[in-house]
Image (cartoon, rainbow, N blue to C red; front, side, top):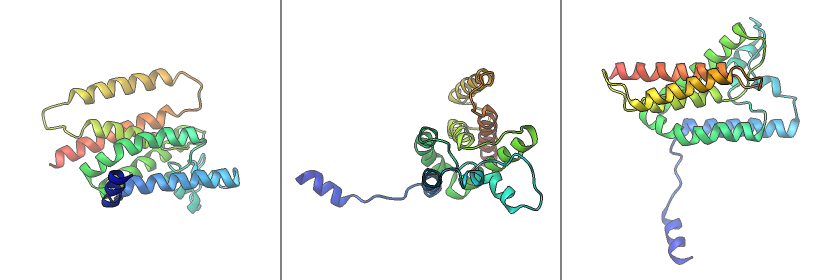
Length: 193
């Protein structure tokens, strides 16, 4: 334990990606709340199925649905990817920009879900796909399209179109919209440079 102990004493843990880490902690806390209370708070963390103009909860749910997950597998599947890709994206675009992108993607997904579908929506899959597409655009330059971006888009869209024919309770709509948001944000930031 001599050399390992010395290394551990000299190393400190840093909160390197505040938006991604806080997002992870919040989603984990919501899942813990579900595990303890059952379905009591379930409706607060799923996208609304009908619009109630004077209900503040409706507006909260347009964004809060990204914090709710139905199972540990659902939560860990999403956040394994978010924790892998998110810190790189947060470092590239800044914490504030990433927070704004997450909120806009969640809001767009929540609003379009209520307009187009009668089913509820829960989970951070749209954010996962936003980050995947956004990360493939990190070294995008004007008049140059990275081959990795084209491959990710082709594989991603192909998989989502094929999966949309399955009856599996997975919202391919949220995945596709998250990917579209990621591409839009990536192109926006490239044009700002």
